[in-house]
Amino acid sequence: VPDKIMNTFIDKIKSIQDKVKQITVFTSFEAVGKQAEYIRDGLQYNKLISNIERLLSETKKEKVILGVMTTLNALSASTFVLFLRQLYEFKIKYTDRAIKFVNVYSHALMALFAICFPHMLQGGSCKKIR
Image (cartoon, rainbow, N blue to C red; front, side, top):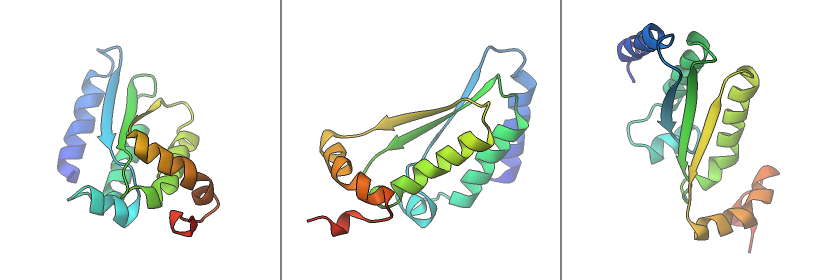
């Protein structure tokens, strides 16, 4: 999102945040870096992270919730652990902010993750599993 649009968006949130019970802003990504950009055509990953940081730091913690929607897929598997770490870093930095994680997945893919995930947590990949 260009800076001018993001500035307007945050200004509009600030102007209404005291008039509503809550505002949830959703974004959608499930990978990091170049992999995220490949999956989401047109995405500029560093800009996305910067915009999330702005949203969390410039709006009221008790009013604005960040919702992160993901679609687990074969393309996100290689950086999914790093993606979870990114969300965890947001949660550590903004300890008092509500960050919701919405996950869409298939049963077959979950079986793959159940096998691969322990290896990925240790810095490995699914390529090593036979």
